[in-house]
Length: 200
Image (tube, rainbow, N blue to C red; front, side, top):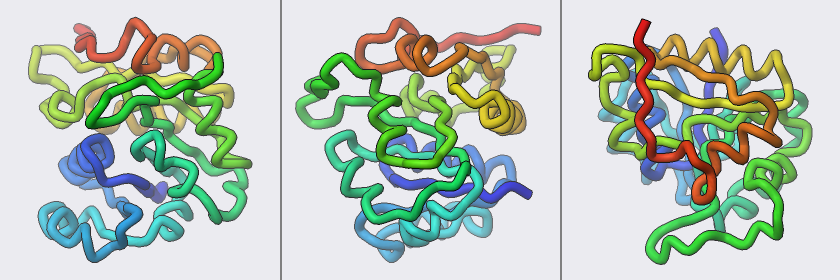
């Protein structure tokens, strides 16, 4: 069984943990304030979701990262080389309360995230839907809710696609980060906040 870690326990990180728990999949979730601050979430989602440190969550084979943009460098500082493990970039370069887009100097947000996780195989996913919609039944509209993903490593993308399917969603491959990262980036991309449903 592939191990899963979650770094960030805000709206998206918590939503992802709830989706995993709903499907009986175990994961370790962490935030910058320490495991004890996640006791309520861990109790709610027991026995599948456990609270841990960022270092513990980062040791998993697949690690979803969803941290406020300005706090990403500090959250990921001091972690060892990722050695080919998969990082799911669920971040968006904008955050409450001002919702002012970050200045990326012409780069894609996923390119910046990749620079913070040396040695990781990065896949962009789980960032384009609001958390409230992400946690709803993916078959609520009679089809399968679409989750977009993109990445430069085909094997890593295949593993994330398999996880997306296991969670009940319809995965749509947007290609490499240079294309998919741009399409799914919020703000700026055309796909975020659109609820697409695939009908068989």
